[in-house]
Amino acid sequence: MTVTGGILGMINKSVPGSKTTLAPDATEAISSGLILGLGKIVIEITANADNAAEVTVTKEAFVLGILVIGIK
Image (cartoon, one colour):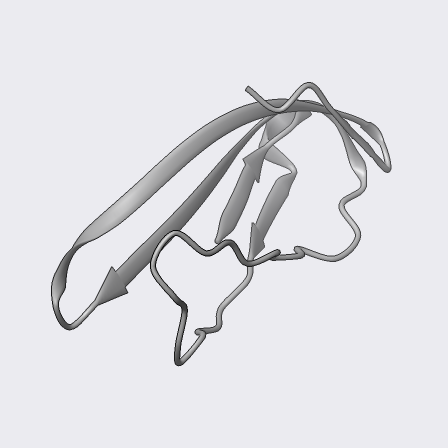
C-alpha cells in the first residue's frame, strides 16, 4: 500500500507486507500507521496471487492533521 500527496507532496508513505492466505470474498484490514499532513491524498493498494491477475485499487481522500476524511 502507498499513500502519497498532501500540500507540496509532503506525504509519501509505503506499507510493505503480505498475507500468506486469504479466503475468497474475505476482507483484511491494512493500517498505514500515523499520517500527519494537510491536503488531498491518493491511497493505492495492490494485491496479487499465483493463480490470479494482479489487482490495484486507487482511492482518494483528504488529510486534515491526523484525520483522513472522505475516502472515495
